Amino acid sequence: MNVRRVWIVTTAALVLFAIAVRFVINFSHTYPPGVNAAYYPLQAGSWLLHGRLMYDDLPLIFWVDAGLARAIAAFGMPIHDALLFATRIVDSVFEPFAAVAIMAFGYVWSAGRLRALGGCVAAAMLVVLSPPILRMLSDFEKNSLGLVFMCAALWACRSAMATSRVGSWISLSVVLVLTALTHLGAFAMTLLLVGVSSVVWGVVLVPRRYTTQVVVTVGAASATLLAVVATVDVHRFERLVRAPVALFRSGPIESLELPVIVVITLLVAMALWTAWRDRRALLAADVAIVSALAVVTAILIAPKSYVYFNRLLLMLPVSGSLLLAFVIARSSRADLWAGTALLVLASAAAVSAPASVQRPLMNPDVASELLLLQQRISDADRTLVVAPHGFEWWAGHLLGTRVRGELPAGAKREYQQVLLLRNTADCPPDVVSPFRAPDVADGARPLFAGRYIEVYEAP
Image 1 (cartoon, rainbow, N blue to C red):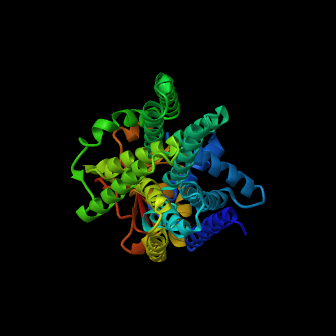
Image 2 (spheres, helix red, strand yellow):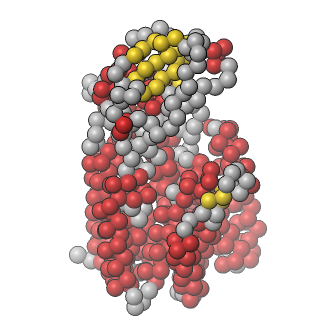
């Protein structure tokens, strides 16, 4: 078996193993884990049954979920079950393909040396099997798919800069559009990575006669992609535009622990030093990619508003793993022992990762009571159900009504019926939402009293 085939087989094995792990965890309970798990079948079901999303959002993952659910339902599965089944399949299958780009970068940066294989596998495991990644399972499905497109966009960007072929730039554009239709944070970081890479490549590393062309092209492409987001979801576009200022002005500042910041800063410094040392041996495209990764990693670990801090930190495994793969791949002495040590550490983290997965917020007993409640709702289209965050998505999915986590002003004017849904004291603690239940005002009429849920009609 030649060296290239060894890299391909190893990559395929890692992807398949990660898919298997996600399948086992995702289907280990009757209902998927995570606070937001029901948001995806709710939105996909609304698109499938009504031709629109119930709530404005970037639509790609819901289109995929709805399409797969329709195919599954064609074999006789009830549509609500098919939606749950489809969303878990999509979330289990797609995210592990992020490892492909990491391994591809490791292969080209190391010139295919087998001594670098272990370290690159360890780096790729960070984006598919680490605790932060598995904690996103079923809860942050858009984010997970966004990470895949982020990795694919970086590889497409490198290919486009390295070959300057029109087809490569078209491929990059397609991936960027897909990212823009998937997740706002992933799109913002991907656009920043590609933009910084392109500017470094076009302004610093290639002949100056191309500088104007690159700057104009990057600007025009960025404006076009932002227009795509604005067309699909204007509210998220507004958040994206305000983000550079809001990062530091939307509440208390949060930061990583100092030792973590030091370690990541050292990794960034090592990667930049290695890129400078090997600048004549590397393609300009590779130097540009590493420069962009360093910039984005610094932004991700910088202290910022708590509103954005944890959301953006979800992108760190991508930039961190690629910088790690670059350092290992370009090392001529330490790649074997350092790669082995990293592989051991990454494997230990992967073993502990399933423990970070959140519990499901639904079980068959609570679901059966929600279905009994459905019989008390005369007009689902004109009914609003208010329930604790996380539980409200299950209510919307099973009842077919609009839902909110808090009672909005003017709800009684907009809806014929407004229901306040709460868990009872007898509800198993593991399916009770950690978020606050809606207050029941004086005069609220009891509508349903089960063992696990109680429902009041707002006055």
